[in-house]
Length: 254
Image (cartoon, rainbow, N blue to C red; front, side, top):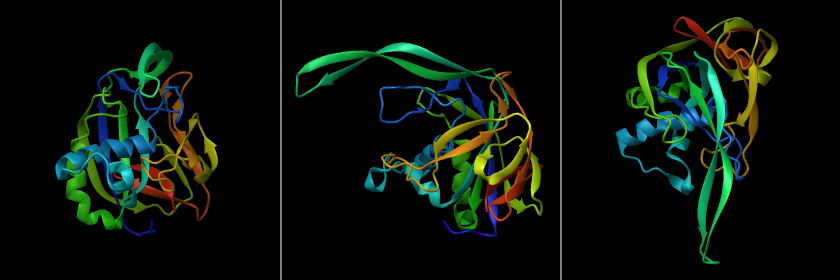
């Protein structure tokens, strides 16, 4: 992806009607869920609306998700948690049929879910878009209003508000933020936060995770007290950008 001096942002406020589930471990019977939706899931949520608007198929070229189309336009996905998140696993029986053996088999698998309170909104997602996305902004804004789920199809979601504009570069190496960011962009972090190892969508096609590249993301959220937080970050020079999105800031790759 080209570095571009002009960036746009779409800030989407999401109401989670009960919560969500997004698979944490791939290629395994394990069905545990991330506590906070990773960037690929949130890009997928936006892509779902875009696919409905443009009548794209669920899968694009090479069997990849339609969400992969957006990768060339998305520079960063930064999420702010606004409510308490509660992880819970249901023990469920899963059935499948082995055609070669002509046998039906079953197993017990823990299905991870994350429940939320009814705060409005539960999540605020800021998509940072590169300059080349300018011609796509109209449809991307419509798509952001069309987000209807996060993670599994049962993760019903509605949008309460959408903001957009030009993201301005801040001439500083320190910022206070309540939004997630890549952990390796920070030199010093002050305040409570948690981390998750997630798929790096900049280096991995969305939908093909056989050789996925992972990267650690930091979230201003305390999983013990279940409270959203704010952190003060000193970013690594020439590696990170601080962008102003309305009256807030997010941290992205330079």
